[in-house]
Length: 114
Length: 113
Image (tube, rainbow over the protein chains, first blue to last red):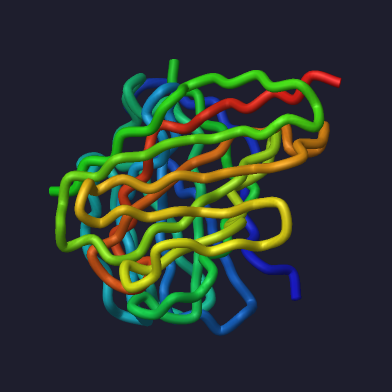
């Protein structure tokens, strides 16, 4: 199993550009989520999904869209990038949202918006 | 919503000594408290977790304690080794699982050889 994969590893965008961060898992996990990590603020939940076709907002959803058309993929879209979205983004998955299972994190995408 | 505070933000200990990281939470409905270790350039990795019906849990050199009355929980690492150097995050969830985890702000632990 490759686990949780994220692409790209690094990205630089100009203000106003749009892009999609890719996330995929090959463990048939129901639950997937996106976090952003900023210095001194820990990880904050952006969006999450409890299964294909179901998504919901987390703590900081503004400026981001997600979709879950398959169990494996959970892309994060930045509609119009802003400097405030400069961050490290982590995708994670676990077998179930409401059970004590380990949540597996991807290696992260470092995004810089200029 | 839930608020998780974590202290200290940085911690340096001599190799072989113990390290303790503390977290407090605000939502009395929180029931699941995992701890993550993040090495440089990698995503967080679960190292230990505890549920609200348990007061203490141990796994080799690491242990977690939970005081539900005081709403705080702690990570204890004994006989520290250089490979313990990393950033550690606590988290809390209102469910027995990963849905809507709220993370602490992290502790950078440095083990001095």
